[in-house]
Length: 115
Length: 113
Image (cartoon, rainbow over all chains, first blue to last red; front, side, top):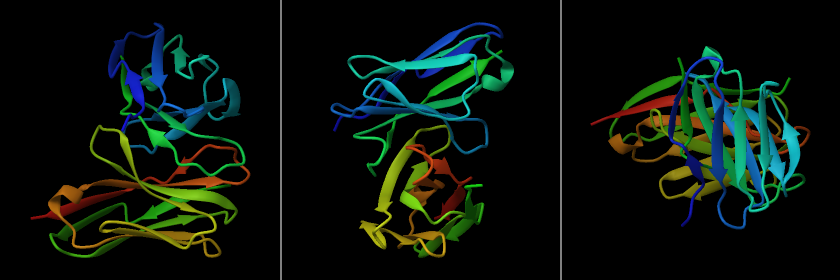
């Protein structure tokens, strides 16, 4: 079965650079979520989109922005990178969002290292 | 504040043992609860999803239970194998927190041959 695809899988950037992470949800899934997992920490919710509209916002820095496109893929844009942004970034997808209880399926993650 | 706690943080057992991982949450108004497995540096694999109206879910050697009123869930692993070694994460979706999942810090399980 098709899974959530994330690219790139690994990314190395320098401080103050920008990075773009991409997520391709499972076919027919209309909701995308982004999570950040720092070293030794549990995943923290950043932001989600349902039918191309932002549906929920968590602890996402103002330096980060995201959007969901007409084909339902999503991109997380990160600017003015800091050392503390080094983490594993997960994308998840589900069918339905608010008011529903559908399972979230996670991608393999993008490991971002900021030097 | 809505929080998820997992105890113990780490667990080491011999192969073949049955074991229980615990998850507690502070607010009983949940939509659902998911158990995940994470291998070191890898992604999250969904193991079981329990809706708020359910009491338990089973998949193979795994059984997850949910007691909303007491704010607790347990993941039971039968006849553990070395391949079960991983970190197990519990995540809750609350009724009042949109569609986000809130994770516990996980239990790192080691099954010794």
